[in-house]
Image (cartoon, rainbow, N blue to C red; front, top):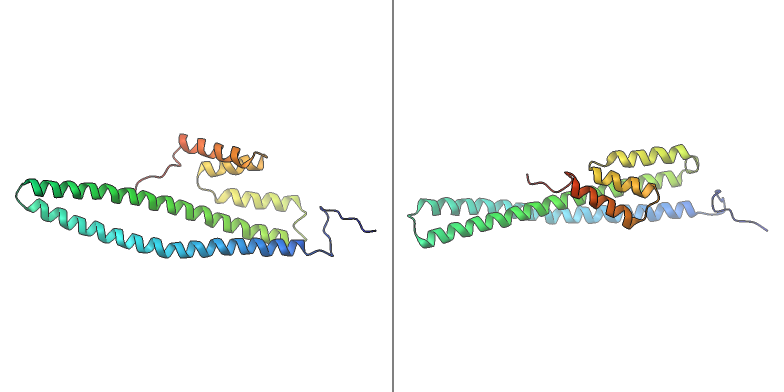
Amino acid sequence: MLSYDPIAPNSDSNQAQETVKLLTLSAAQIDVILQDSDLSVNTLTESFTDIVKSMQMINNLLLSLEASDPRNEALACCAETKEKIQAAIIAFQFYDRMQQCLQHVTSNIRGLSKLVESPSKVYIPSEWEEFKNQIRSRYTMESEKMMFDAILQGKSIDEAIAIKNACQVSSSDKVELF
């Protein structure tokens, strides 16, 4: 009777190959949605650029007119629109951060796939340490590093997210205006 050891490689099994295929599928799905969303965001960016130009022209024309109640109301409307455009720019920055995070995820999935599919590396602790160090080195925000560290210390997802959120509140990882 054959016994099954879940830690040792099993030559009769293709579990590693199947895992690699599913990880690759996940990375491909994320890449596709990022590419598709880039098209939409580029269209929005161009639209907002045109709106800003038009609003500036309207504002300049209004400033050239004699002072009147309608002129002042129109100038106030221009100022309100400018604030809304600035809010949209903040949303674009948030999208940029999300895109960067998803690019890290796809990179991590690809790296994990390579590690899992390589029988000469998958059971070597130093290979896993190297891979984890590569992942952590990609993070640019301290809150990301803290969440990564929390997960590797065995904390739950909820605990790691709470740690990340607490770090963001107390640091400069917040979205900034440019």
